Image (cartoon, rainbow, N blue to C red; front, side, top):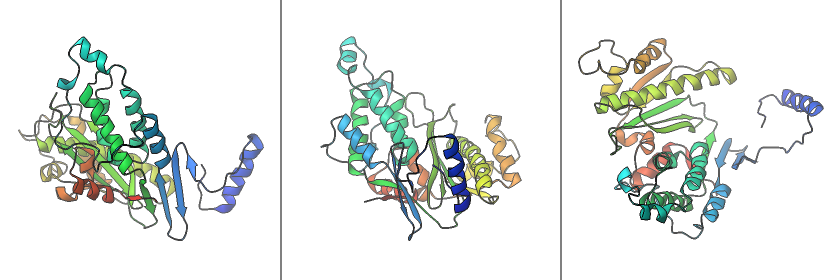
Length: 317
């Protein structure tokens, strides 16, 4: 893939490459690595989707005729080690199921064009080496969700919008080790360009600490994205990162260590340096407007749809 806003330089590059490599110009990008690209010059939009890949995945796991659902995770169900097989008989009952293969197929979707399933896939991947029947049913539920949303994709639109981030955490959500989940997403050109859903490395003592740790991870990503954008565009202005915990927001600006926060790992406090340099600015956003919520927990159908819209996802056909 080659991109440039200078047609002459673009043509020269292709000409030089063809002198050293056997190559063919396939014209405007439409398909690459399982991702479908649709460009609308009139509307100035570029859409990325993987409907073909989803159909192939559904077929591979004999789920092409399954009944669709509106959310990838049942909000009332918590996957845990207690659901793993405890006897040899139970292990034999599930050992032939293609669980790891399914999670791997879903992972490619989750990191490429489908941030809406990222948290579900992250949860399922924790049981790759020891899964039970309930984990398998939860994995198939993601397929049923994809069946219902197979034409959903990311639509980027020329808008002049600056890079903006959203960071969230679900405190103590893992019932096995009580660690929290971090979720962040960065939008650019009206859609998500970077996102992450992961379990935090240490146990947070409070919701403020969990949110502060999520801000730490999102700040590192913001710095990386800003450096990349400065190479291809003008130097970006201060990047705003929204979070829905006012305590974590205050902690990112307060230099005074006190009893309630002195236990927080020092590596997380580099947020303050980024704030001082003007790289980022932490601002509060109510929970019901937090698009990163979908990256930390299972949501109801209305909230799932609200987050999908905020991520810049739309039906492509």
